[in-house]
Length: 71
Image (cartoon, rainbow, N blue to C red):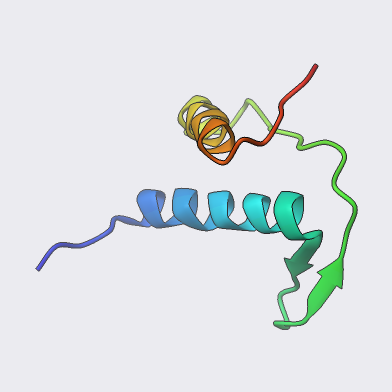
């Protein structure tokens, strides 16, 4: 059986959470409840070990989903 390592799982979860926020205007709280948000920006912290990989994956995912990115 194949396995997803924790870093890959974290990346997948972070991407899913960001897409949910941007596309549907909501995030799931730690209690499992949905909270409504209006996402105008996505802040990436560059000091994490996987920050660059996440930024690249997020950018490509946004492009695939035709989500406009502007500076």
